Image: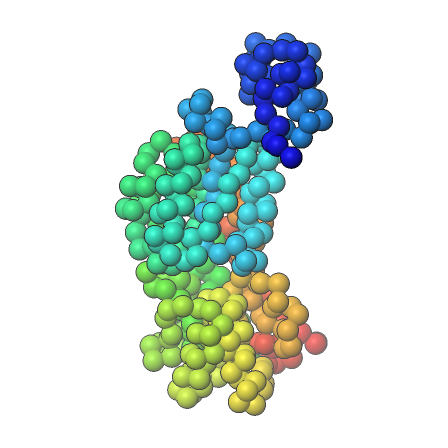
Length: 338
């Protein structure tokens, strides 16, 4: 079946294709009765507007791009869903790209979006992206940018971040209050702001409790399940009785290893993750984690890009609070059952 075009709508209504184009584009000089007739006929025939082509013709756009590292992560998928909902309600279209945690894929996605004349981009950077320089070279200053979660502060526009340092502080203090004394950390990439902030919170909690920092039980780098498994072996060898993890998947990998070795969680070993992924409440023992409120992040990011595109602001730095969700993996004192 051939694709319905503007010409098909025009022929069906006995009007010119240019009139159809103006009506679909919201031209104020088209009569309301004509606009409605065109919209009804377009819906009846199953017409789908080519937004990118329209952007190229007009030089203007109501399209927003979203670039995220991995769409399958619950955290990012919730952000996309929330942002889409706000943007659609405000009359914007959305194009989604993934970087797959690769800087070159992130740059390629940005060039594709800017080449399609998007008016704004929401972006959370890949772990391999080390600075904002390449981002600005790819985007230029005409496209409005809102960074969320993983951000660079030398890029113009708005940022939406979590209160990561305090989130990590509260998570580590929670382990201390439950009687754990040698607490290691999966600290993530220390070239990325969110992991720097979380490591800072972890260190502050140890200092507050009078526990010396031992860098031999701090494990930087990737925080997936496999890395968590491998690092848990080292943590156990070095006498850890708990781990603060900057991601839930690394905590899950640690749990795999501890189970394999017959280590009781939480009696012998405590675990706290970050992100409150869906699986954290479903596994046994359930995983204590820090809720990052991704729906709020997505909604605030969408509203921020709308304000930028409308010229209502030149940039904002918005912080979304975190909340610790205590579960079985850190409940050494049995407080959840009291």
